Image (cartoon, rainbow, N blue to C red):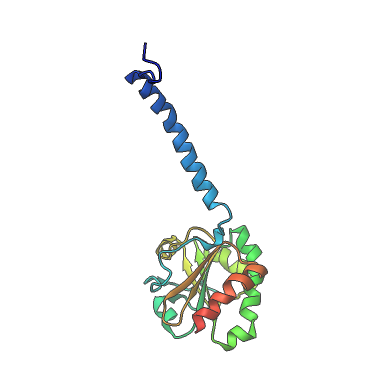
Length: 198
């Protein structure tokens, strides 16, 4: 029995059990804190290690039958801002995004500034990609085929669709993940294009 005012001693076994009971609680609280800090983060602004770096040294062959050239990193250093849009005929969100790309390609103001659009056909069959573009229209001035997906890996692509803004010197200025909408075009992509044009 302990003296009055002196706390009783705990046995080493009891202290160990208490510690083991607190470890899962601490892990839960750490995970909950992590999830709470990620709430409200715009998933379209996934950071890319390539932003601020030269476009990857990848040469993509053209889509046969489209009548457009493929492209490589050398084509992206031509002094013009280029949007590289990763798409696939099998991608539902790419179909949803396509009217926005068509409007972007038809924008006289951007065309006057030399902005061009390149398509990277990701893990697609040429016949399917061609059918997709014939049905919905071709917003691209260049289309590179990436049947095996190796080019997309070099570009750091997470999934389709994704759009990159590339400065005239071939440096990646911005990456947008997910399908573009009229709202994200105005709020995110156009401001980044304007920055890249400076």
